[in-house]
Image 1: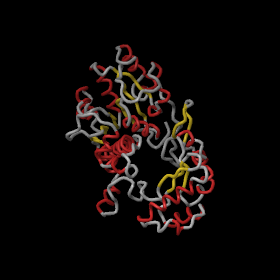
Image 2: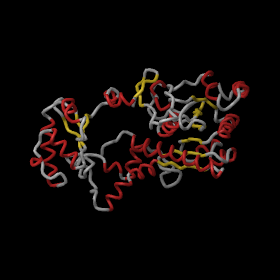
Image 3: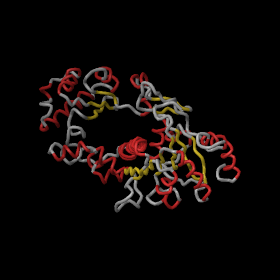
Length: 381
């Protein structure tokens, strides 16, 4: 497989959410990832048809009986050849399976063992269940997202699971692999969503300490408090986003909207913000979203239409960049980021676990003879 991570081999112990997202990130960039599922997988997360479970793209899966010592041994044989492993169970689960860090590092001392959890491997909440919303709530992030006088807004599960979880685990695994190439020693990467999400908010903790950020939703420059960083309703019921923080961009917005700056007051005068919002809101309601887009988008006014997922794939800029692709009839984001030389191949769709696909999954790890031995013994189907 092409891509900058070509040659990297990863074992993914099947899970949901941030673990599969991390595995997809690595596979999209060329790593060989094998997903090890149980023969009777638990029902977790939001179920959907395999074709639409796009986080499972770009890799094959095998079903292994992890209650059978021979099945565990088979996974350990995969681990012997791997650069990294991804697991997203509660603390202690893989140890009970015989696939914990000590078990795996004993077989492969250079292995980077990635652990993806919400609360982390230790601490008072480590043994309990949680989801993205809970992790954001505990770190202070959720309290900061939303409008003044309204409950916190839920930012999908992008900020916690995927940004604070998947991306940090991927970075940790790659950092560990690089370090192991010099030291010859693997290690455990404890990627807790609470840690990653908190780290993402470093800027805001600094601004709070400096007295530049007010606790309380919708009262600051970039949290919908200011008139120049917000979304406005247009005449057709759709929205436009504006974000000209710098004065020269704000001036351009007002010029293109044919608004007298005197009507809004000084841009950074918080006392003028409420009135400025009213002026901008009234002006935006005079035209449709797309009419305003035609005036503002191709400029330095920092204004763009608020698009739905369905609309986004058709936007001219994203079409020109190939930001979205179609895989097996399903529109989805293309691999990112971009590389000038080691360009990843187009992803392939999530694959069912079948004998042929199991053969494909194991072809980079075992000989055909070994695969047949495993099948004959009932370890795989």
